[in-house]
Length: 110
Length: 114
Image (spheres, rainbow over the protein chains, first blue to last red):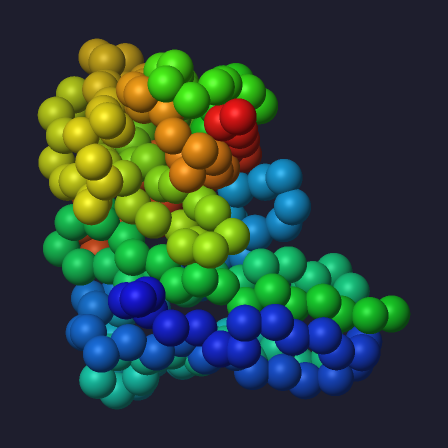
């Protein structure tokens, strides 16, 4: 059983569509991070959120940390083929023991 | 600034053998964490080293071990390999420890156990 549940597991959309992926847990985290991983590479950090209710925007990506610091969402506006990849959320506490979700595999078709 | 490097990139072993993987962190980073990534289990934390000391350990059997050298380079070793050890092994380095720290991942070593 994953400590962090990500949904959906797979998502295939057309270029220009909007999407939201979710990361949920029954545990509270001090911080939550979102990564994107492309085939043959390691995950690359997109954002870190540390305050309950925090919203961060990175161009077309909007990240939100739940008020209770147990869940998070990632919203992509006007998705592009370059957004294709595996999106991972990871929760951390007062050490470097990051717990990862299984990921959402996003495919954006041109 | 060079990123995290891992060697080898690909490795094929047979059951019962042992393997050593290497990770060179970003210059100046003192924390190195290791993860195992499989399609079924996702990314799972193995252990973390900081200043040559293991600071944290995930839920893996004792066959999985690691160490860190004075230059912060790290190695992990898996003894008595099993088929289920086939996975992508990722290491990540960070400047400091604690919540919100940014981990930089290497490209991984893909281990196949036959």
